[in-house]
Image 1: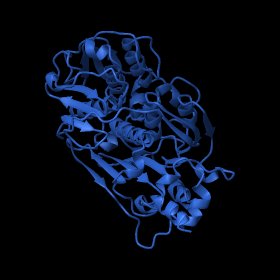
Image 2: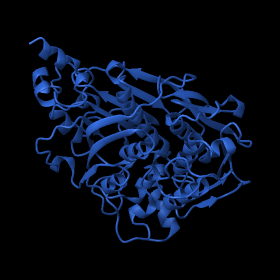
Image 3: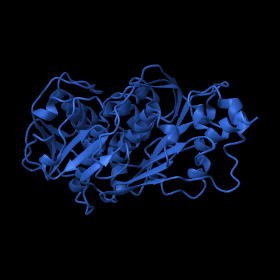
Image 4: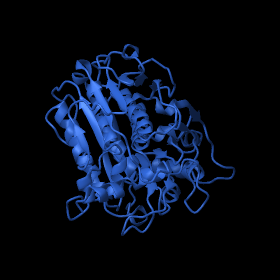
Length: 456
């Protein structure tokens, strides 16, 4: 397959379904920046993450700003900032027009940093805070600290605005600040400094959109672990419309074979083991993990995980109605996975992804529709919570369901504390959880079980 019409027809049919447009005709975009962005890790993070997301839906974009040595990792290669941006765009979409310079026909201009040339929106970050401003003077100066969480969120906001403009959607654009620490709009407190976080043994079930985003962001943060990745899927071309680590060649573009999703993700993780099977075929051999990331939603995965009386679980989902949701499952304290996200044979919850009803040749199930900034934000929310673990904050957090609404201007993010349905037994008895999980790293999150054992 080498025809670009075929490439876009297959790559973009999920995007077309999501916005109910067929065919889709994205308009050109421009990204520009100044010396402050070029020579700071935070600025470079915005530029690399932003260009990654733009290349997954926009077919023509210009990138203008100073070149500089790379200060952060570039997953797809490149010896400098310019090379990293262009290499990523070309590997994500080899049919696109990626220009190192100005595009006079661009319908929307994204500026990065206070020294950016004129733009429609200016992106910046400091600590846990993302900025999206109409004037560059409203941005904070880039810090020399290594916390890039706000930069990641700023890139997602910029991509969301660009998506709406590029496709002529009549939705409100996003401006202001957003905190990944407080989940509040217009919060300018940068949040605490990061500390190195060792997760222990981690089971990642699923290697799709949210998992790809999670592993992409993990490249930039002091988080380590021993990873078991369980997934049997191949990379399909329409996965590359929103999954930050999958590129055209992974999906077999100009090659004879596709890559396994789990194998691609494992390339970016230290101490990762791939299990090339579906989770219902996976042999755990009695192993108990410190943390489980349930990032798949098919073949009854969530019910199977919950039936094992799991330890701490964290995951995120995207929706067919422009939402990203973060889910916390502290055993016995938070709503279980079965109550939060029932199996697919039951009525789909609001946070379930939307099926587009058209399968690729050879698929035995229809794919799900999603957008690049939704998936990227989902992975980033998980990373923020993993960093909270290292900071010792997770045990005391209020709220176990955080919802970001991207349809308008992110609105007022909602933080809810949800409980299981009446008579739910999915968490099992406290003594059973203690027997199974007392040796796991994050067992103290199970306050009910700890309290039960200490009282007996």
